[in-house]
Image (cartoon, rainbow, N blue to C red; front, side, top):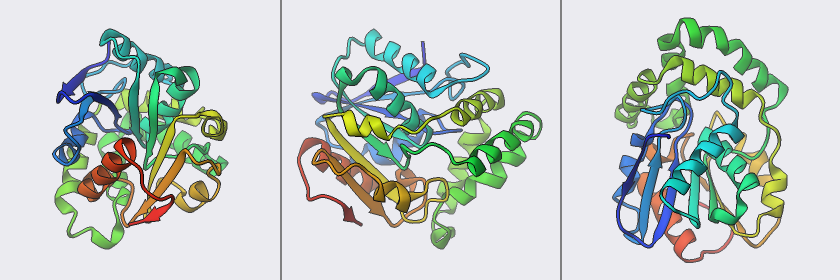
Length: 260
């Protein structure tokens, strides 16, 4: 069973899946801004935080199955599911397998698009350095995930992200990268899912092709997208704005495709 924490007693259960080289602690800045109507189920994904590695190659679908085990353990059958980056990929895998569990699906600085060949090659080339020089891999990559125009303001958050990443089991990170290489395009999930779909994206996100992803979203009334003036880590860069959008969209309604 994956490690998890539940916070709050709201009637709406919001399941939070962190990204690559993160753990369930990443949501702390957003928590105080999220509505009291939510209970928060925060999960350490396989090979991250206090959760054990489940396979040498941790596919998104495999990790989605582990998330479902947590929901079943808590007897949860209707939830709001939100995933950051890799957590978003896992959320899509969950939506494909278990759509009946979802009240909403939120891609939080993530993408339904598969990696292009260049990105896959980058991931494959990272295998050896993750295995043999993990701290170097972390320190070289993490700062680039934040808005380059606000590096000075975000210095403390970057340090937090570095600390969390460095605490990650490098073999868990490696298993997850191998799983991400195998990802396929998941646009059909958004096309077929009838529940609310929310997309939060960063204008300066170096990990996600924001413009392409937003442009090619299915034109459906149940899908809403927001582009924020930040990088890949809205939970650290714009926690109050992200929480406000989540509160409003998942509990109420706003006009479509807004830019903050």
